[in-house]
Image (tube, rainbow, N blue to C red; front, side, top):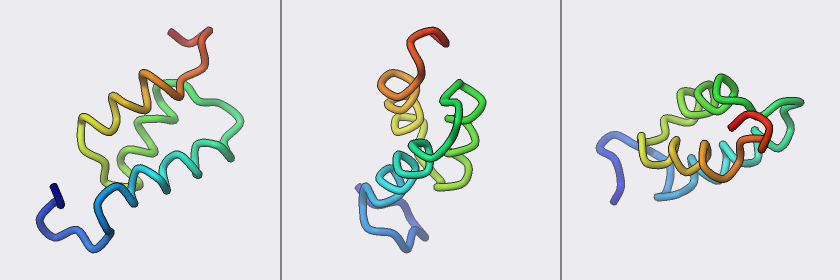
Length: 59
């Protein structure tokens, strides 16, 4: 479902967030929260990043 007022196609923000995170030296909760704000992600998208992108030692 597309968010009201969003100019990006559905899922594009998440794809950009993943690409941005791949460039970051750390992938901790704080960095993932920053990606969520930068790319206007939903709470569900942010949780996906936390579950699948965070470094194992950060869990």
